[in-house]
Amino acid sequence: MPRSKDKVIRPKPSEQNVKSAIKMVIEKRLSIRKAAEEFHVSKSLIGRYVKLNKEKENVEVVYHPLNAVKRVFSDEEEEQLVEYCLKASKLHYGICKDDFLKLAFEYAVILKKTYPSAWDTNKKAGIWPFNDNIFGEDEFLSSYVTDRPYVDANTVTHTRLDMAEIQPNIALPGPSQYANIEQQYDNNQVAIESPAPSISTGTIYTDKNIVMSPEAIRPFPKAPPRKNNTTRNRKGKTRVLTYTPKKEELELLAAKKEKRSK
Image (cartoon, rainbow, N blue to C red):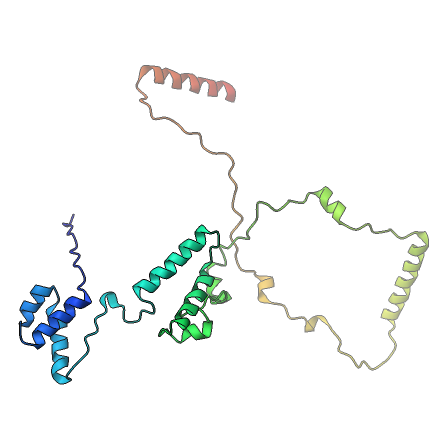
């Protein structure tokens, strides 16, 4: 096993300490090393701003801890948003995530904050809007074989009696109607055997016009439905088989099973 080493968590320097350290170095009161030790700021950070000050005079020191360069709201404004949401939930006026993003956008517009251009397009906070159709059907073809249709437990299973009630009542034809049907069938047979010569202006639909997919001949494999195993194995107990009472109990159970099998 390798030796585990605890990570050292160093506190982030405050903006005031960074400005004071850079000012002391620029005014040549302290060296970069001494200023870094006194104000607990990294030497590279102080050296970078000192170099900028030599190239361009009166460089404004702007230090954003925790990479907060692209932040829209300040700490106080974020706290106000959180307090508003908590108060709304206590008043049973809770808002969903989408409404909260719209509220943040309106809040940023009123305060004249600098925010990403995507906020204007979506009229709410967030760079990427939620898209239900981001994944196409081709993305799910790899799981086609193992997909099973979802069967809701609340759906009612129709029995034969239910299906009989659903089916409409179809009136059976009478004896006179049977005679008419036979006569029509004979007329159609005569027309088919001796068709009249005529020029067809429409499209003749034959079996050759039907386009059949290869999937109808050899369909893709599908996983069988899941088996609902209602019978479960009985839970046993750990026991010492050489122990006399347990041994006798096992022998009695084995004898009962032999009698049942006979």
